[in-house]
Image 1: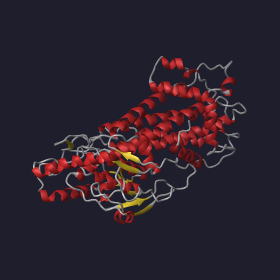
Image 2 (image 1 turned 180 degrees about the horizontal axis):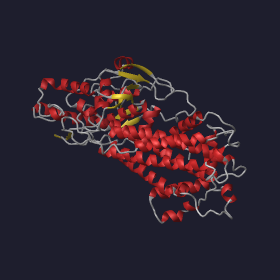
Image 3 (image 1 turned 135 degrees about the vertical axis):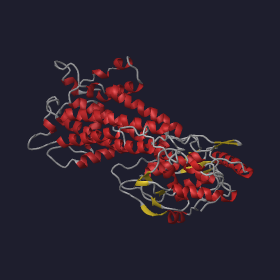
Image 4 (image 1 turned 180 degrees about the vertical axis):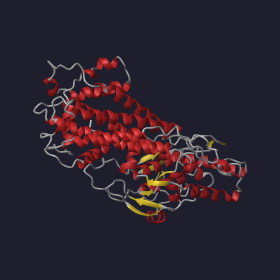
Length: 545
């Protein structure tokens, strides 16, 4: 194992002259019909203030390597020196030489300060429920390392470096999903990560895809195999590690990325449905949206105009069409999806701040150590709830267009349930029913969690944001929405079969071809679960429009 006495025994501090190069993950990527993008091998360098959503996704899902900026490491160590000077004075500072939460008035002898941090971690390993997926755990680890490098944390840079050693080795702590109220930060989830660094608990080595669950083993064995020494938390370091919003923020960052892709795909599905239903693109005229210039509304209208350009189907019903205007689920997409767009981008702005924010407590400012409340997850919880609402809205509108295509009362001449022999064949009847069930579930989950405070810690933490509850719900809603949009895409592609030989708009034609790579034309009844799930898997990885 490489070593460096000043910065710990990590080979991932950028700028240090070490005896061996950064290692690459040795485990294979799983085979997949949609392989991950090939990323440049240059590591993502953590500075404490420059991490982006795109970098989080690259590390979480594509196992991009990570290193640490040397200047960031030096700033962190200077901050640590201030903590050590304070310890020598003996003055009481929360969480360094006192108990925690309601026990903050209990002074801890200097000889017991390291034991205090160890006890803190062990007592907070209290998460329950399903295990978080590997990509979320990797994102958590990356975010926590980045925050520890900020000069306000007062932790040795070797703590962040050791965490990066574990991340780059493909060692992923088992982190239960439940047990955090989002203040003082995501204590339980982060404690499970800290326990792994101490050599405790279980981990998954490798993994990252459903087809490659990785190898499950003990943290002690995994660290020993990787040549990584377990960490011993010093005064303040245990508290600095678990006091923050990195679990809920990791989920938010990945959900924002996936929501952007889903919105693009849902906009493409809209254009395909409009063609199948012989709708008009007139409501997408640029002048209409300049008259109400919300950014998202203008963006979605422009995308639809591009997708529908050069459509032969449109030309076929341009004249003598008795309809005056389309239903809202077709006509008002820029107004509705535009609002979804703006909400997602607002959430992205919150993520951009939170990824590089000091969310632990207390914070070090030069020679002063101040106690505050930056660990409170309300900014993250609010936008998680907001995304739950807008993604539910997106899926609800998608299902309405799907219903119009399979319903002979509204399908503009398409055969019932989009089958050539209705009655003998049920066609896409159940696709709409499945979508309706998913929308109904999402609506029940869209009730905000961030207003559901339950006081904790002897009423010391008397108003909490419930950010992880919001994160749990939005993950489920996102998954549902991906499947609802998949159902609409299947119906839209099938609807276009009955409009041939007329060709759709050039953008719609490309989406049709991409759908047909996964879902063949429905000639007769067949099991439809593989079609829906296969297309949903595609939507998890890319935007179709």
